[in-house]
Image (cartoon, rainbow over the protein chains, first blue to last red):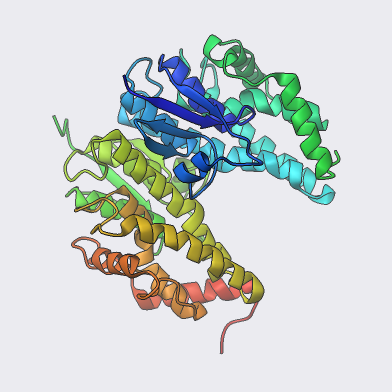
Length: 220
Length: 229
C-alpha cells in the first residue's frame, strides 16, 4: 500500500488544508505533529528551503507548499476531485486560491501587525479584498459550486481562523452586516463534515493567538 | 479535437513586462497564432481594466472570449488546453516539483533580487544581496546536471525563472552587483546561457537598451533621486 505521511502543525491553516483534502479523498496517512519552535530533523530534511509545514511525503518523496500539495493530491487520488475538469474553470479556481494566499491573507495580517496610524488603511484594504472574494461567491453554495473545492479548502483561514483571530484580538473585520454572503458561506463551511473534522479546537487556537498578540504588544 | 471553430487567442502585454513575456514564450513554444495588445501601463486601456478588474495588470489571456489573469495561472491553462510541447511533465510528483520551483522563483528569488537588491542601496541592499545569494544557491542545486529545470526541454519552471536570463544582467549592470557569478553558480550560469539562446526565447527578448533606460529610471524614482546626469 502506498505510504503517505504528513508533517503538520495543529494550529496551521496550511497544514489543515492538506488534511482536509486527504480526508475528503479517503487517503490513509500518518500524521506527524511538528513543534514549530523546535523543528524536527525530518522537517528540515524534507523542506530545507522553507523549513515549514505542511510537507507531504508520498512513498518517501516530499512535496512542500500547501497549494502545490493540494494539486498533487488531486492528481494522484481521483476520488472526490477538488479541481474541475475544464481548463478554464480550473484556471479560475487557481486564480482565486492565489488571490486568497497572495492578496487576502497578507492584507489581513497587515492589520494585526501594522502601527496604530496605519491600521485604518490596512482594514480598508482588507475589506476591499474580502468584498472582491464575496463577490466571487455570489449565490453559490461553495466557491467550488455544490461541493467543496480547491478554493474552499484554501479559504479555510477565512472560514475559521479569522473568527478566532477576531476574538483573540478584539478586531472585527468580518460580520454579518458587512459581509452577509461570506458569513453565509462560513456557516455552511464549518458545518460541513470534512471541514468540521479538520479544524483545531477553537479555544486552544484563541488562547494561542492571544499569547502571540500580547507577546508582540499588539493592541486593538 | 483541437480546434472547434476559429481559435481566437489574444494577449494583453506591455513591451517590457517579464511576466507577460512568459505567455508569449508559452504560446510560441506551442506554435500557436495569437493577437497581441500592447498596453501602456501608465495609461491602461478600459479593456484591460475590464478584463483584469482585480489586479489591473498584464498579462491577460483571452481565449475565445474567456479571460484568464495571473501569469502562472495562464501558463497552466495554456498547457492544459494545447497539448503539444508540454510545459509540465506527466508524473504528478515532477509536476509538483515544477510548480514548487515556479513559486519559489516568484515568491523568493524575484522578491529578493528586485525588492531587496535592485530597488535598494547601502546596508539594505547588502542584506538583499545576501538573501538573493541564499535563494540562488537553491536554484543552483536544483539545476545541477540538468539542461533545463524541465529536464531536456523547457518547462514551467524555466519559463517562470526565465527573466533571470536577460533581465538580471541588466539589473546587475545598473546596480553594479554580480549575482549569478560563473564561479559561484556555474550550473545556473550555464542554464542562463542555454535558456537565453534557445529557439523562440532568443527571438523574443525586449530591446536591451530600452530596458536599461526604463529600469535606470525606475531605480532612480524608487530611491528618490532625480534624473542621472
